[in-house]
Amino acid sequence: MNRVYNFSAGPSMLPMPVLERAAAEMICYGESGMSVMEMSHRSPDYEAIINDAEKMLRELMQIPENYKVLFLQGGASTQFAAVPLNLIGRTGKADYVVSGQFSGKAFKEAQKMGYDVKCVATTKEDNFDHIPALSREMFREDASYVHICYNNTIYGTKYAEIPDTGDIPLVADMSSCILSEPVDVSRFGVIYAGAQKNMAPAGLTLVIVREDLLEYADPAMPTMLEWKTMAENSSMYNTPPCYCIYVAKLVYEWLLSIGGLAEMKARNEKKAALLYDYLDAQSYYIAPVKKGSRSMMNVTFVTGDAELDKKFAKEAGAAGMKNLKGHRSVGGMRASIYNAMPYEGVEALVAFMKKFAAENPKA
Ligand SMILES: *Cc1c(COP(=O)(O)O)cnc(C)c1O
Image (cartoon, rainbow, N blue to C red; front, side, top):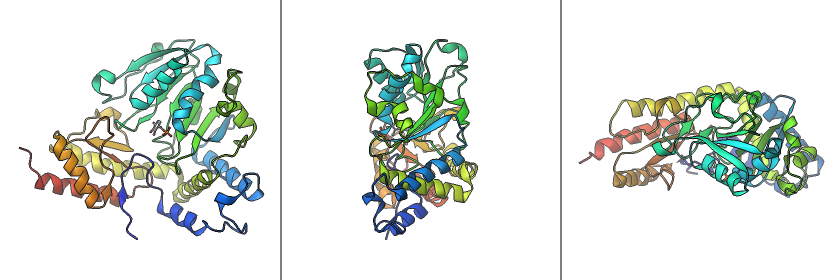
């Protein structure tokens, strides 16, 4: 077996102990005589899995009692539509911060449905190289919610702090930073995340929603998008993404076993610092993101020469460091160093960066 360091932005690496456990239980789960993939979602074995998953996630994230945890399908992109459909009924309007591609898509989706949505801030004119400065006065007082993307996967930016929206519920897409550090859930009305970056295989979408926000859904909306229906049925209105939830449970177990999100944050900070400190100490590579907005999960850099960037990604791949090519819309390089990326992977990357710079002087 020859495992590589996989720097993919998503789907991405899973912790080795999780893969090993899933492999060991693949054909026969416990005493059940079957794989989790073959199990009825209404069976006692499976009910224990999904209940444990929720319990562990609540413990990890310290999710308050008055929040519901939903395990859904459809990816984060489906939530771009579900968010307005579930919440706009509060006041009829909503505010968006556009800090990158995914928040832009979320904004457009709400606009497409004909709602009164406003982009209150964007850093588009700066190529999304930082998170816009936000203050409470920028939001419409009667907005149903304010939507942000907490970590911008493509550009490699992240909010340094949770924006203050006063009494307006804050909705955050946390697809690429969920479980990377402790967050104060009570500061948010809704947190959602596609699982495939930092939590589980693709196919599972997590929604954490404050209970009082379940009352504003448009009655004509599709049942499958209605959080209230999903909450009332404990995510079992229809067949949930059973196997993904099982793997998510293994990931939660792993996180608890290493000491929870505080320990995970310490490890992630150490990995990110290794890479950013190197980037700051040399001039061959350029890190385009402004310092106060740097992501701990997705680190972007360029050589300034598109041909060299291409060569970098190719040679890194041959050296066992895969998927370092930046997003197709921005080019350059991106190292996604999610929870499952070991420190050694980042050490190997920095060593490779030094070697590449020495071997490929710029004209
Ligand atoms: C990957 C990603 C998405 C899209 O997720 P899907 O599950 O593919 O729909 C949305 N938002 C962010 C922040 C992402 O990183």
